[in-house]
Length: 126
Ligand code: FES
Image (cartoon, rainbow, N blue to C red; front, side):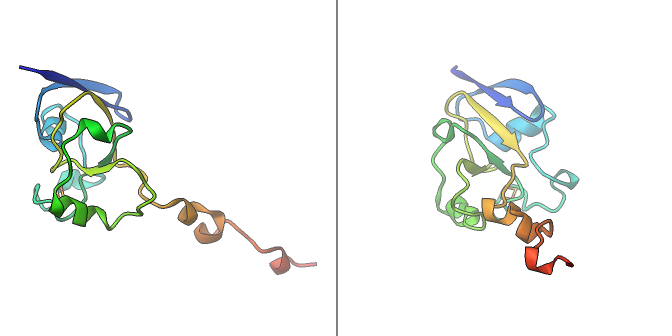
């Protein structure tokens, strides 16, 4: 049986899973929580609808191709963010690195103007 190495960057955990393993199931089986909060209590339980199980990988080709439902769910994220996948829908087909709870805010939203850290010079008192 072909095995693949999955490295979780934030957790610094490396596991080995059989070819075709569901990524979410592999996470949970090895103590890696793919959900940002509450351990997935508010999730859709692997139906590919809620997108709370989203992960990011620099090697998207190491996961199965996203099907229609997953592609639709991923549209809620900014298209400029690469490598996002729903862990509950993705199957591992090669070695890869995974970032759980990735930053899904587009770059423009993290600019100080939108986060309240930016002050216009014309607002400054003389
Ligand atoms: S658990 Fe809801 S989309 Fe993955």
